[in-house]
Amino acid sequence: MTDTALGTRDRIVQTTSRLMQRQGYEGTAIKQISQEARVALSSVYHFFPNGKQELGIAAIRHADVEFADILREAMASTDDPAEAMVATAELLITHLRNSDWLDGCPITATALETASRIPEIQQAVADTFDHWRTLIADKLRAEGAGIAEQDAHDLAHTVINTLEGAELTAQVTRSGEPLEIAGRHLARLVDSYRQGPTRCDR
Amino acid sequence: MTDTALGTRDRIVQTTSRLMQRQGYEGTAIKQISQEARVALSSVYHFFPNGKQELGIAAIRHADVEFADILREAMASTDDPAEAMVATAELLITHLRNSDWLDGCPITATALETASRIPEIQQAVADTFDHWRTLIADKLRAEGAGIAEQDAHDLAHTVINTLEGAELTAQVTRSGEPLEIAGRHLARLVDSYRQGPTRCDR
Image (cartoon, rainbow over all chains, first blue to last red; front, side):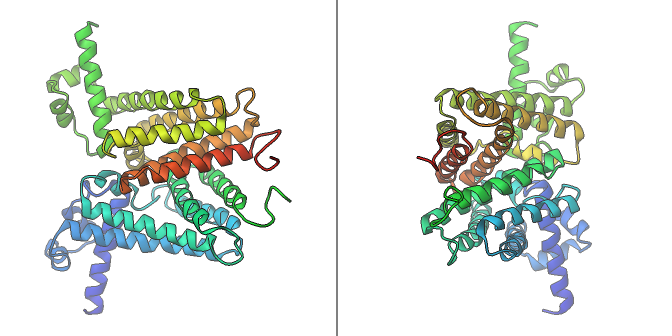
């Protein structure tokens, strides 16, 4: 594949991902993708001969990597797993604010629409959430974090779910407050599961 | 208004609310509403002369009341504010399971699509979230619950946001686990803010 071809495919996937983030899977037509990516319709089908579903899955994978990068950056910013929750919330506030509160979780709209209706898309969404949870759980179960395996697994669920909900409310209210509160609460919750000296004993 | 007229208007609003729950605001056309509600298009415009936006706001208000009833039922089921979190999560699991994991939060899809784009709809969504938070905060700040005013306000944010996110993941994974975990974590978090004897001291 030449650089240009790679560039074109990437542009199609990125455009699809952004459109699905803002308007979901159903509402995103191949025609709109070709227009917004400034790529001929035939070119979209060249890269995605199986059409919208194949492209949709590629866009979810792109969103997966993009959001995982944010999570990884936040996790790497501090050794303390509780502080990492606050850092994640802060990073999400920055990203939301920079997009004028438009770009929240890249797959929530798609997840909602396709659950129990389009199994292949639903599976790609489920895999993505699972990947994000793994990044959180890895941080929580790291040596020195002092959190038991099962607790780390469960906490990862609530961390991702709380951030999801808080991002949505932040978008609706155009305010970082819901995420700021979420970061604080998640830090407290994580801390409460640490073995050895905890907030309670200090 | 006659009983029949009231019935017709209600059916239009309920149908709109259910369609917006599953496919958002943009994807829900007046024509589909009239078909699914088995009501003439002219009848829809009779009740909602200002068209889709007016109907959309009525549907959000309907969803507001419907979900508030679930929250109220859960809050009333126990005096203990922490236990009320578990009860809420369980009730949401039951509702989701009964709809084959289709009917999660009634306004998430609409909230996502309209944030920063359709101010009137965004405002109705924001008012609804605010109403739900108030129901939670009232329980938390009730006499005997032992939670300070500001803590109750902040916790209400995280309770609603965590349940939002957990409902979405429950839909995607067709499993009650994310909500079950959310209920447990929210109970722990609420408990950690109680003044007087807490989990930490026991």
